[in-house]
Image (cartoon, rainbow, N blue to C red; front, side, top):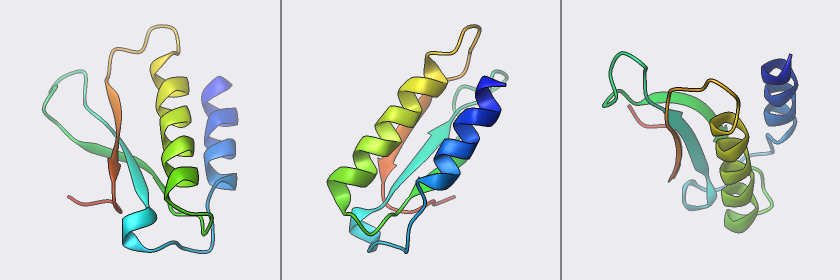
Length: 82
């Protein structure tokens, strides 16, 4: 239930599309491969870099703070990259 609410909140944070330099992407690793880089969400609201970074870091904290989470979450500046 918490994950569903968090995903809904992340979806609501989407925007009209910021420039590449103002966007942030949230990633996680895998319980089976700590070096894996899995895209979770992109924050690219038109409100700018600080806004997108703050939302990404808040989502990172919420995901990481859930009981039983064994994966690591982190934010990177820019849009999703493989």
